[in-house]
Image (cartoon, rainbow, N blue to C red; front, side, top):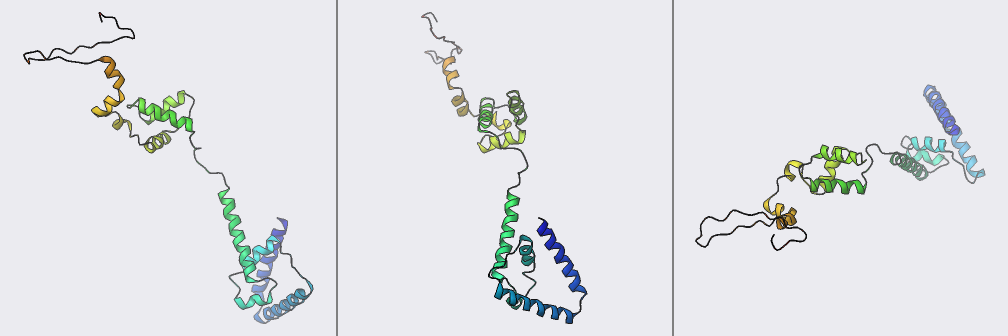
Length: 207
């Protein structure tokens, strides 16, 4: 980190110094620097570039013409690779940040919500939220809405409006146990009044 700050400070000072120099001095400095680079290339097999140096060279990549790279110790392809690495590191750090918002709902809570909605068609999102809170599950009403809609379960107002087929499917056992029936007379007069029987587990012959 200290090396990076040092490189940035030197870079800023160099920019300020070159902005105040005249063209002749800048050309002379460029020639001297190119000569030094040629000497270093003959003596040094491999140059070590610090992270700060790589960042500065990557920033200067688009400001230097193609021919100007011939007098430098690094090739344009190498600097381009540094630039791409910096971009990848930036996005990797961005993706690694903790995401904000509500944590995902557990599978157990989702199943409980679906069961409540199916067994209680008149319960709305806030009613289910209150019942979930009684069970120790803190779930937002908007999350409950998303869970129900994702499972194809409509809002409470539409869930309570069951068709006759849906009513029979939901209450088949109750209808059979109640044993609703009616009888017509032999002369096709008005049917007899329906009788409601409540058979127990062990019905007697009298029942």
